[in-house]
Length: 259
Image (cartoon, rainbow, N blue to C red; front, side):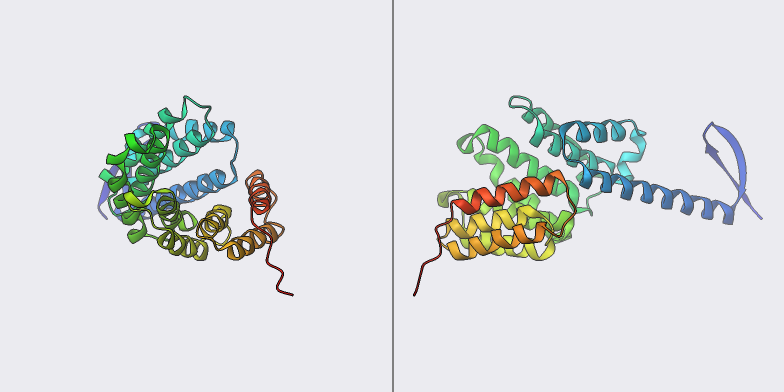
């Protein structure tokens, strides 16, 4: 049987039969997939800046050659976005810019995957928020295009993240720049269907309802989130979401007494 030569650490030349080589490579790919699933789970369970910083260090320590085909660029972009959210004022923009750079690499090397488009759009939106809307007019259309591209490729990614981001965008944009409350609600309702355990899907939808004067629906959405959190794992993310929901609920007008 024909053999092929491959290199393995620590750079020792060995000979493996062709069929064994295929099995070996499949095993390596499976092991890598398992390690990425474990990393993704670590990300979901991380909350504090120090935890996200540790994830960044773990990723940048990997061989840069693996980034092109293994989906590491968008994972690093995701971490940089999380770091930007948690960074002190004055340092956020640097993390968001790093997010954009890694997301662009993901779009270049893996254009069929949605994450690169999503995180590029998301972090451009964060840069725009920091700069102010008048200084960020040129970012709006590219941001929409990236989020819609991500939604087209996989609307369910990150628990409905493309729909969640689009809903928030259309809710916050002024009318003269394309803001649309009804469209925002439609996107956020879809996000909630795709990600019923993501607290922001409830919080953003409740906010949209109240912006459009639908206080009863906003209140019901917040109460549903508070009730659901009781059945979810105890974590800082869910604890914060519960506090945010209770705070938001206090601003909702009481239901009308029709008696």
